[in-house]
Each structure stands twice: as structure tokens, then as C-alpha cells.
Length: 315
Ligand code: NDP
Image (tube, rainbow, N blue to C red; front, side, top):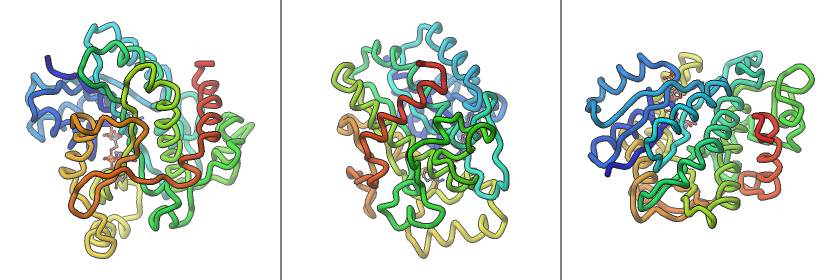
């Protein structure tokens, strides 16, 4: 049978390119988990994904109610789940004030981390039950959360501190809207959320890999300077960022190439190692990359897991 893969945020950018790459193999049915049903349908058509290779399901990660409904509907559909890709994200670098999810969490961390955390937890049983030769849970990470890299050292740097803002509810009322309890900064909130994504992947690995055989992995697909992620940025940035990445940092990858990389992490029979953060070298060969001190801090990962469980209502 075909494998079944859920990709969140498959209506544009990396998610769409990955959906296309997997669908084209003829070996995967892609469930595009998207907040805008019509946009997702149009996107699938625009890149030529054929009808029998995908379905669109509604998922708004900025609402835990929607996440629960999605997981419930999927589980009851009887379709096996062989891979889950947590890809969707928002990036609000120019926001002066925080905005919030339905449950009142700061939007970047609420969407990118908490929504995916609940989704992955709720779908873990479905993944466990899959009889596919390999089953994988992939959470898209980023270099920007990694302070051991040049890009990760561009201020404001990611820093989760002692998680006091998160533990306080991240709601800008009783607590700060930032994980570390500091003043709101949209760019930092995104980087913090990516550190959470990478810590979550490792904590899943420690808790569940041995017992379930599921491969948990993260990746940095390269700088895809053309995606919608930068839609909130100032126009001059959007104009200069792609050529800057192409010619100066040379970290630029096309959406198609990045989609191929993520598709590889989902389906390549040789990439079964769990707990790994994948990156690609100049020749486009994958390698196991090192995470920053904070993004590989096991104690912080455990604490983040426990605090997040409380916030999404699992504990
Ligand atoms: P895009 O903005 O093109 O894609 C993001 C996707 O997330 C969109 O499909 C968007 O939906 C979806 N999304 C946003 N909010 C929600 C929500 N509440 N519920 C459901 N879906 C939502 O950006 P990219 O393709 O660049 O980003 C994809 C991933 O790649 C992210 O995890 C990002 O952190 C990561 N990444 C990107 C890099 C880059 O250089 N671009 C580099 C490293 C990592 P909609 O279409 O409706 O807006």
C-alpha cells in the first residue's frame, strides 16, 4: 500500500514543495493539513499534484480545539498514519505588539510549538499502530534557533531562559508573552519557537523511540528565501534577502530543492536514525548536524515538555 503522510502548512512554501515531491513518487498519499481549505486545494492544483495522491483536511494550529478536532477526525477515518510532518509556522518580525492564539498564547510559539506539540502527542498512537516498514515524526527546525551558527547569532538571539513566561501561560497578562519572561520581540519569539521544535523532537526520541520504533527527526532545509514566511517583513528586506542569501551567504536553496530534502527525511530508507537534526552540505548531501547548547539541553527539553503538557491540557 501507499504510505500516508500528514504535512501541516502544506498550502505554500516548503510544505507544498514537500507534498509535491512525495506525491510524485506515487508511493505516498499526502494529507495537507491546512488552515485555509480553498488555498490548499488551489496550491495542490497549481503544482500539479494529482487528485488520487492528496487530500486536504482543515487544521488551524492557532486553536487547540481545532488541533483536537483534526486529530479526532483523522483517527476515526481509519486511514493508517505512517509519517507526520510538523512544518507550518508563522514569523512576525515586525510586530510591535504580541498577538494571540484562540487560547491566548503568543501566536508564534502558540502556533509553531504548542499547536504542533498537541498534534504530535494526539497522533502518536496512530503512528504507533502503523505497519509501514518505517514510521516517522519530523519537526522542521531552523538554523536561526541555533546559536552555535553564524545565522543563529544575528540578534535577537533565541533564549528560553528558565521558561518562566511559558510556565505563566505566555498570555501577556499574568505573564510575559515571551518564553523567557522578557519584553515582546517577534523575531525572537519565532527563534524561540524553533528551539522548542528541536527540543521537542529530542524529547520524543528519548521517551518513545525505543518503545515504538518511530523515527523522530528534525532538519534545517537551508535558507528558502522566497517563501511566504517573510511576508510580514518590510519590503526592502523581501527585495534584498533572496539575492543576499544566494550570493553572499550562499545558503540559498530553492523551494523545490528544500522540498526534496524534507521529502528525503520522510521517505529515504537510509535516513531511519532517530533523534537526529539533519542538514545538507554544499553538494546537497545530508549529514547529522550539531545543535546549539540550548537546543540540545536535555534538562530543558524535559521541562519544556512538562510545561507544554500543562498548557495544552494533557497533564
Ligand atoms: P510559508 O509561510 O510559505 O509556509 C508556512 C505554512 O504554515 C503556510 O502554509 C501557512 O498557511 C501555514 N500556517 C501558518 N499558520 C498556521 C496555522 N495557524 N494553522 C495551520 N497552518 C498554518 O513558510 P516556509 O515554507 O518557509 O516555512 C515552513 C517551515 O520551514 C517552517 O517551519 C519554517 O520555520 C521552516 N524554515 C523555513 C526557512 C526559510 O528560509 N523559509 C528556513 C528554515 C526553516 P497559509 O498558507 O494559510 O498561510
